[in-house]
Length: 569
Image 1 (tube, one colour):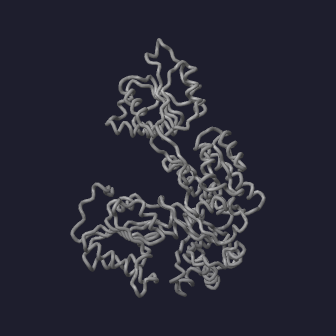
Image 2 (cartoon, helix red, strand yellow; image 1 turned 90 degrees about the horizontal axis):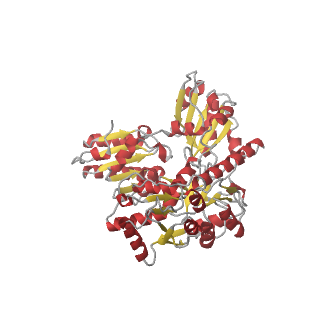
Image 3 (cartoon, rainbow, N blue to C red; image 1 turned 180 degrees about the vertical axis):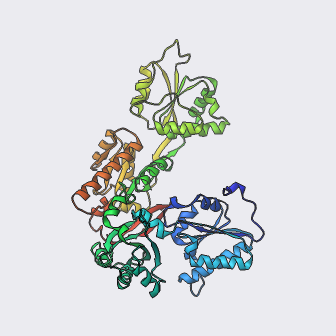
């Protein structure tokens, strides 16, 4: 068993180097051992392609350096110079007693620069270890739905087209096994030509995958003889982006029929969709995770900022009343209300034990989860609609025989509606409706985000309340008409329509997770309709004028937003 971060001994006087494989791009492919090593690193040196993937797991205060930013005054623009300086930095840091993590794309055992640095460590007497990673030549075909072997146990050969010799091409050309070729978009046709010249038939099936294991992944089915024409028809060549690395798989196991059956990644319902999530950062986290599971790229834009009440005395009296037995019930109608009460508890040195003897209600699942994280299990969560109305349906009327106290503490936002208060009063309860926090309009997002919203750069927007509609339009403008509009319920949909938006998706019940599910179902149906009609599967943003030109987009990698230049579609 590998040691956990807390079990590591102090770094030796000579330091230590971990050569770490960060995989082909998907942050989820990092190994547990890699995460452990990153957690105790003093210095992190990483290739640009994986810097954000590994940096998310590094401890606070680690010295971070991407190899693209390294270099000498004479040759800083060359990859060779960057690697040389990176190697020098690795050695210098290790000699200084630092724990160094040297992260490379794929697997360090297939990286010649990493191998040279390992030998340098040996010469200098610096201890090192190797943490294997998922090699692109193996991971990318798996994500493309291309099995490299089947029950027949055929041979598999791996070729790097940049360094392959004539003898290498002759050997794989004479073989009838699967060939995995690492190359680039602009040279993949030449690699196919080498295989044909070496004896492979021009009609041998071939798949070509770019940006493998990321939400920018695209795979084309072709043959050795047709690959140039296929890429030209797909309008990805000729292109300034032709230098992008690709993994090509040649052999019967990369046939189009086989891949269509096994393409689990690119066939996700929202694959590659840029989805705008206009919520606070805390609220957006679980929703964004759910969207990622559908293949989407969530972009979180806060539309509401939460601030303390202008006069805290009312909240302070109510929290003290909790401790002194003033209330029979406390009702939480949002995660923010839980957070506000919890912060006030911490201010007074209290914890969840102060809720002893008090019944606790939560308006829905997310609020209940926030309470459980606080150490409080709610006594009442609506069995039906997760709203104030749903809460009232299950709320018991006041009974002086069974209820020694007739008062309810209701910590809420300053703009909350009166539905719950009026309903509780009708049930015979006295209500202390207390402003626990204020909601204000957030600051406008960056200019590029505003332009993407108005210009159709997002494929979908999720509106989780009427205020998110009003505030997003107010701080960023109205979403483009090609953008899919998804609303959490009728009231939110009505507000969206009042702002001139076409509502495409509505959640079957007022839950953010049901809203995400509904959007995924919409995307799945849209994909199925395109396939049935024989049309290419495209994202909504690709329907807007000029969408087939080169464009800049953003992807969340390792918890950070990464801007990239996309392919021409």
